[in-house]
Image (cartoon, rainbow, N blue to C red):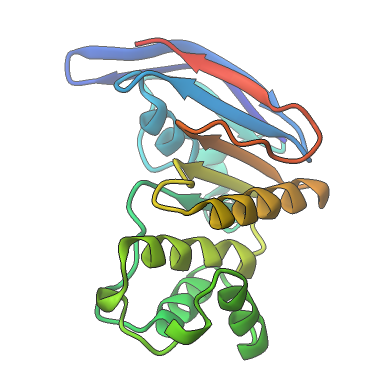
Length: 205
């Protein structure tokens, strides 16, 4: 369970939000919405422990995330605006590198299956720098299929994807929720995910 209470975020001399709170249980999805500049990405980074909050608390299974350290990071998968891929490595090397960081060792079959589902089977041995932006995004998303994190935090995950890839990603998130996972995401596109209505949190700039 993810519990957030009274979060406040200040960047420079500007307050982005204050008093933000929600409770997200297993199997549930939170859609984070708001205009550009309202603090959506800042909130996601705070949830991941990547940026400090001015005030407030975040609990994971009842424990403050700053006390959990690596335990929380192993339960978390974060995908930001940037794909966070190593341009000088191949697709396979990137997936192996990030799997090792997450403490997992996917089999060659699992890796090949994940890439095939995203239409990247022929790109396994190609350097990431030689891929299109859409292909790079799909490589980043393939990591979702190879990790065991319970909490997915996704910042505009549908950007640069065609309709088939959007539906595939929606299905992946739905399957994650069906297995008891949790997801928090932002999106300028309205995409239906699973059969359970999402919670919605609106930030106002």
